[in-house]
Length: 222
Ligand SMILES: N[C@@H](CCC(=O)N[C@@H](CS)C(=O)NCC(=O)O)C(=O)O
Image (cartoon, protein in one colour):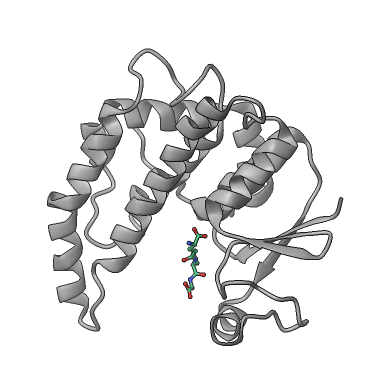
């Protein structure tokens, strides 16, 4: 099976959760990076410059023997099954993992939809308001749903839910998102604990060393 993962030049959780799953499972794939300019063209016409169809004009997209698959969580589950880190015969465990992937999407959409304004000052104010209000509420809910006695969100080993949360929180705490303080995870002990455990995992270290720019700030978890 030939796999080609298509995303932008940025280690955002939407793509990383699937890519890292494949990496953990030792499943080979092409890591295809597209430029911002090509992304704009895909948004408009739903295909790469080489003619590859991108179903919903969105990324990530995974080509499986030339068949394009879209949607973050679906791709992640597919990669998780190929790599053996997502349950194939335990529907309940699978659903418990899925809820975190979808909640990560909820938080992502919330952040992307906020702070939309041409004026930089207004943008920052909107994000700060989000951070104090609805984002804080979502993070408290996430915190409440993470087991206090384990490094992992669900189960006894690193899985899709952990990777998604680590990268999402990494982005939010990196200083790249206007209006969100880099130290905010100090207030969320359980989320921070998961992020630290993921960050220290040998397979994650390996992936980061192989693919992230040397000076990339991948989060503040302490
Ligand atoms: N529901 C999709 C959303 C993906 C998405 O919004 N991706 C962004 C890049 S991170 C994108 O392609 N945006 C362009 C668009 O939505 O037209 C998923 O979960 O994968």
